[in-house]
Amino acid sequence: MKKKNFFALVSGTAGILLFGIGMCMCMLPAWNLFRAGVVFGAAGVVWLLLTWMIYRKLSGKKPFALNGALLLRALYGCFSVLVLGVGMCMCMLWGMLLPGTLIGIVGILLLLLLLIPLCRGFVKEEAGHEQH
Image 1: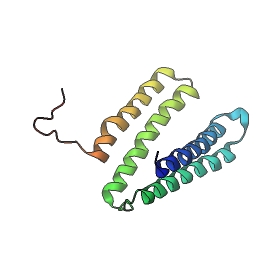
Image 2: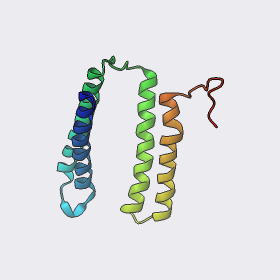
Image 3: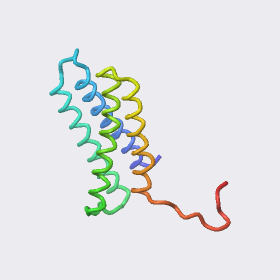
């Protein structure tokens, strides 16, 4: 395993743990730690962004170019994740299992079916190398 991959594995795991613990602190009212959860969640997001930037540097890649297309993709991704989150909240917090599940599925479909082609594009199949 290369050093950059090991760094990404360890640092990414730490960032996800911070973020996950923060979200648990926010979502469980019995803990009464909403503000601390927001701080932990935000720290996890910042940690993951730093990990991503350091990994790009170690890989020798250029920093990303901030343009209108990237901004629109980011806004669409945030919207899709919010739709998924609303569905989860409807199921777990508000007791609306069927509508929450349907809205959550819509959020997942928005992420899978539209965000991946927007970011990666469609790959052209070369003649003679078609997949069946």
